[in-house]
Every structure is written in structure tokens, then in C-alpha cells.
Image (cartoon, rainbow, N blue to C red; front, side, top):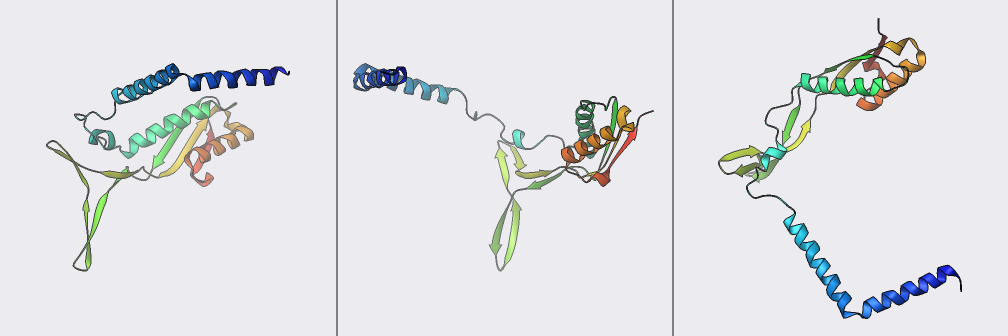
Length: 177
């Protein structure tokens, strides 16, 4: 008898014994009940928790903060590219972020009325944010030590255009002094 078929046969026999065992059924049911209790006790949404605080930021994200954040991220990724060296990045944006709120459209008297959906949490009311439109990037300037090399300059252009999904005409790469 081959070893693989022998092992498979023994596993089938063991599975049959477990299927016919009443003790195994009790153990399986107990494990199932414990698993459900752990899921129920592990959390979920606390009824006292402020629901709107997770979906609506307390302070709006201004355009300069967004540009600074993108600049830092670009600087980190660009400096990791072989040959780029020390890097400075400047990102310009079109405006600050814009919130689009969820609304309920009702037909009345031949016209349409629209009103914002509001979440009430105790005495506090908040509008439901459907989407957040981040500022559009209008340009990126990268100054780096390795920009004298065509290979490095091309890699920087490719990284910036891919990361930000902008055309290369909005990117300028220059050699650092």
C-alpha cells in the first residue's frame, strides 16, 4: 500500500469515528457557542459613542495642509529612489477640500426639493458627509541632488506623475545647488 493512500485511509477512518461520536458533537457545539459569545462580547458599536465624530472631521482640512502632507510623502518616496539624493518638494493646490453632503430629494408639486440628511446624537446635529473632494494638484516642483542625470530625472517624473495621477506637464525637476 502506498504511504499517501494509507494516510488518507487513516484520516477517513478517524473522521468517521468523530462523526459517530456523541462527545465530538458536544465539543463542536461548545466551541461554536464560545465563538459566538466572543464575537458578541468583543465590541461592536457602543451606544454612547459619538457616531458623527468618525465621519465628519472637527476642523476642515485646508489646502496648505494637504499640499504639505503630499510634499512630505513625495519627499520620502523620491529620496528612496536610487541616485536622487537630498530632495526638496513643493506642491501647489487649487483650493481647500470640499465636502459633499448626502441629501434627500423629494418630489412635491411638480418640483424637486432637496434637504440634507442630518444625524442627531443627543443635543448635537451633524450633516452626513457623502464624499470629501480633496484639492486638485496644480503643480509639483522637485529639486534634488541627482537631477543632473537623465535617468534620475526620468525616474522622478515617472514617480510623481504615477503617485499623483497628474500629467508630466505639471511637474518640474531641477538640480539642487
